[in-house]
Length: 448
Image (cartoon, rainbow, N blue to C red; front, side, top):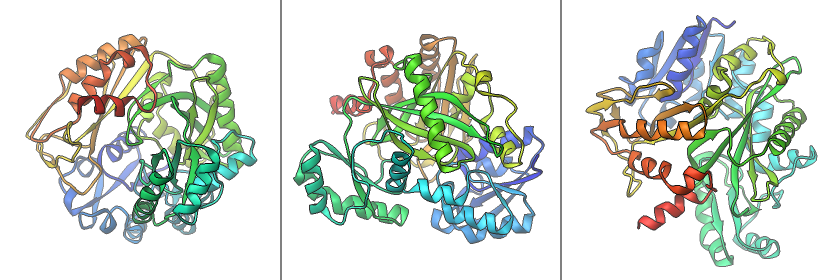
């Protein structure tokens, strides 16, 4: 097993990774910005080093500084978490060149799947169904209009790189494209350094369902069932659960087998997630692949009993999986909600000092935190500050636990999205499992 690992991240995911490292006896190196000097992940790390100013470009995206600390600390591996440098092929390549284990797939695979256009080509070649759309970058708005006119509206105008809904928009006519193209292209360029845009057919009344996989270096592959992530705001996931109430066992197996086909075709290794859109007739289409740990990985851990971070570290250490697909069990139901430091009405970020933090307790309740009482929530980073995860013997049991937990989750000093989460998980459509990707937007629009 690895002995010393640098965690190139911050917040709740850095804390999450360090917890497992400690259980495995792995010495952890943390990094932090000037704004994060008092952060929870800094307190948890065995050693922690300042890497720059508060902005991510000055600190958490500073590859040279992180590599310098890794070399000076003589770490064996770097775990990138999610976001930030986790899907940066250049960062992975630098690690490879220096003999540092990058906890994830190869830089070549990251680069290939990091471009949604290239990923679509790869999946199409592998016989994985993809959403109809372009397989090349569009040059300008007028070309996009011509493509969409032929395809039929509505369509999705999407950035080839990145994620989180940035550079993505549903468009219903040519004028929408003309108004949106340049702005979305610029946002993608600013955030990801790549302004390439493409078009996909918009799959109406769709579910966003993803398959978690583990792949070792010995040809062993397992899928750990699915997560349903249909409840989103501006294409950013907010509530995730496992398993999906919508799937039958036949469709579930087909999705798992298709995901295995996908990762085999690109020579993938480590933990990864293949995301699909599933229409109302249970026809599914490849959406994208995340070559990293997902924000919502805890719900998979809860229903399978596996520690995905531990599995990542073992695979990276060259240890084979010691179980097969038949050994992967599914027990109970788990739901995760993301807690954001934002105004639940305007959705503007709500930075400030947390003056009070009272967390719900009880059977089946799990917290993933990047904060503590007296934490300063700054405006420099993603506003997600915590995740609340519940597990029940079935979905109804999990929902009751979640509703009670949210009612007893108290944060003062900043505003959070907890009121919106409470409303969402008590909505009749959510209780029935009848939630497609437009559920939350419709709920919000009715309140205005």
